[in-house]
Image 1 (cartoon, rainbow, N blue to C red):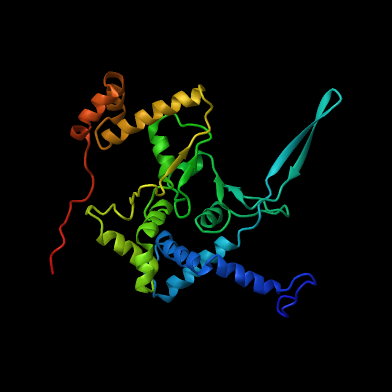
Image 2 (image 1 turned 135 degrees about the horizontal axis):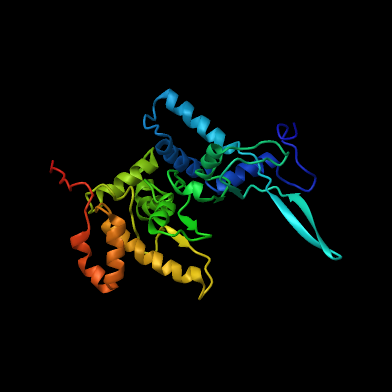
Length: 300
């Protein structure tokens, strides 16, 4: 009722509801929602934007993302007591980061499921960090508002590394949109287009010299722009540090032999017998180009 009446505290010159409106305006919430709805249509497969049913589904998806309840992970506090230790269980309210899995809310009841957590993470709202085991490294999309992966442990093969980072390297991913907006944002905003993000990608596609369909939707590199970030907290001279270098080399060879029969055998053969310089030399002859054929646009 205080909000409806425009009430204010004695030390506040502006009512709370007005402060919320000013905060949203200063942060350009309208632009945030424009980008979110454009991205959500692709994630949900709702391309018929004028269809009433599609808009209902979009509203349901936004509601599900915004209604994520605060998580309450359990932590164990270990305290030395005389000649023994005492373990005290505590629960901490947390909404900045969440784990990918069934959650328990701060009131002790069953909270969000994996699908709702994924939807919330694929939004501009919290959680901003998602923690997952290997369950989340295949078949799931986390690219809508994320372009960085922290590897707490390294996989044993380049295929798993590619799968992990592929979760945030998808169609119209976060890094791609940041670069497209950086390159074409001013001209599109000046044009007065109603669908800004559609116009942004149209402008990027028209100015692209790559006609194979990957640019600008999957790739749009810029100097000093956003890119898929790989973070590995490996200590210098540790086993992980040396393993990372070996994985990087294996990953380059894996991408080279992708599509070839018996990839594992071919990778092992090349890594054991070829230097890095030799691999770079023979790479064009081994690579299978799976990109669509370039099609020239007719002159009208």
